[in-house]
Image 1 (cartoon, rainbow, N blue to C red):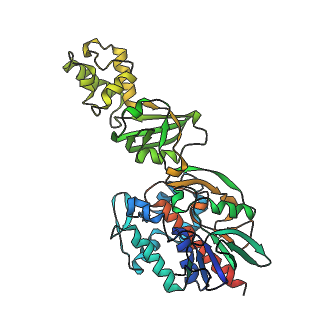
Image 2: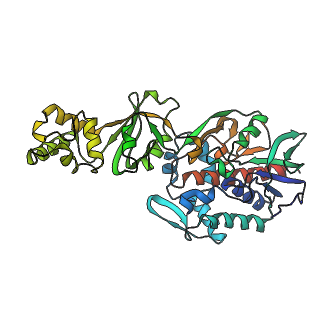
Image 3: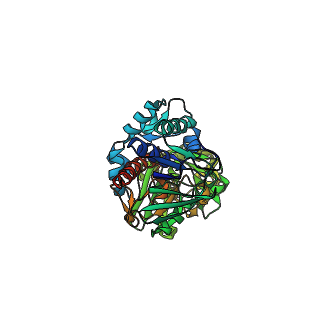
Length: 423
């Protein structure tokens, strides 16, 4: 791997910008197709974001079938049809196996390396590129991409210009900027005539307008349901786990919900169902039974059987009652209010946490300006895009990395074919 001041070659068939999941896969597949390939990475090492995925274990993909997979992509799923069908989760695991990194399947169809080390995934792809003849350049930041006659001229910060028949932009989005994802690819896209859809964080915690969730900081709720409606339309409705934080709410359900929220939160109503297994009628019957058996106790002591003890006093006040209220003093209407709040506790969402805390980026290069069958630009022939730089994002569970691998593989093969057709 060359890290010196001069590149070993000043021209190639395919130039890949970005050494993350999409970029490494693109470079590898382009080389496998017979192209000469150079990969430029501005960081001091490859795959920085891969190292932090899956809490350092790297959730490389998911074994969900293709239709279920597309169901995990809130926007622009159809755009991924060709990419995800031509390079599937089986292709990802087979390639990693061939490169010496076998995988295993865990809960929810999530796939991890058997070693449980994210670094092994990066090492496997790096060794694969090396064996395939890819020239990798680290500490090499690109400043501009422009088309000159039939070739691309790519300026980089080590003081030079590379020429290539085709270029693949795989620079990531703007989430986790410490990994090098600082939006460079958006600038390259704009320079070549592309539109960038509004960029924001996805798979991120949500801030709550009221103060009460902050009083429960650190409390996790399991087996609950979170529902979100925009007007009469249900935009999210799932069972799972959530977490109260210093800013509002987070945890698996909330992070997934964030990817479904529209740009304007004001018209969205989010509710928490703490007893999803029970109907409204069953909840009321249970409350009647609990109240009859504990008539002389305080409300907070009875609520312990329905929710974590820490939440009881807060919940009582949300229902307009004092936690010390005697059960035999609670009216029928107050009991019904408690039941309604157990089934639909309002969470008044104010916004998302900063994009720097997001797992992935929502928005990016407008996919209508990209040919889905090749990942080539409709605006600039020979320019390709792959991975998070595109306006495509999915739920957690290995789906985003699969998108990176699938779009990267298609871009690599297509860019190689384009370059070699020029000969």
